[in-house]
Length: 386
Image (cartoon, rainbow, N blue to C red):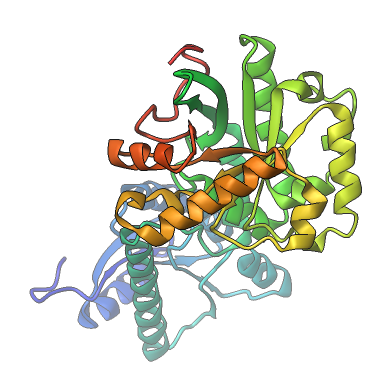
């Protein structure tokens, strides 16, 4: 049944007790919700997969898939959908497990009518707020925000790692009209964490940056092993510098170290690594070159810059965008290019998307570019000539 007026939300009630299901259904219908029902967890999961739900109210003790198993399965589908668990046999262990897997509320039977309506209302409103935040964030150009609970994030990150692959974008010399190298860019088939920023934020929250870094290095190594003799740039999270496997002489990536440029973002808190200079020296001994990425987007202090002693700097696309129209950006880019020439540092300008940007940047003395004007990220090394 659906109310005649605009519904307050769509709620799924799950219980193997048909009388209790009918009681909750009548109560929530009167409160203005569209209510659907399921007799067990398996039916509920199928309904959750179909989408367009704002909350789920489920009994814990059910045959087959119980409420806790339903909660875990729901987190594989939607990281934020509010799940209210109801039980007649409360225990510390089930309550703790419910909280760990992100239950919205843990309610004790019999649940008072006003409490059930109030908690449902709160769940639906908060879920609506979460969806609005995500929509606004995406509209403003942000990555997808990872969801809230740790269990759901662990599952999503695991799938993201399993479905990870690397796209490659060329770095070109405009003066020589050729491809100098490619940047390896992280991609995944996991829809809940579809962008690199979402994957990295999830990994940071779960303290699993090491897992992401190792997977990226593994994939790049596999490509290098079967590729032509082309250099590859790849990003390092600042926490990767603390992973001793990065420095292993027998590691797959180390075998190709002289073809690899390790990019360390200026946004990263490299000052937190006490022995940064020693770690960078170890990487150079293995044959890696070092680049500072996103120059202009963050602020790596003089000490950090001196410790990194970069071979290459990459100018962030925020300085590239509309550079032909903005004299301040032109002056900054030209000044950075001049300093790089004096220090013998290669400079790469990222985010070149238009012919106007390209022409202005070339006039400012920068001839090594990366951006959509030349190619979008794609399969590795489609050709070494541009």
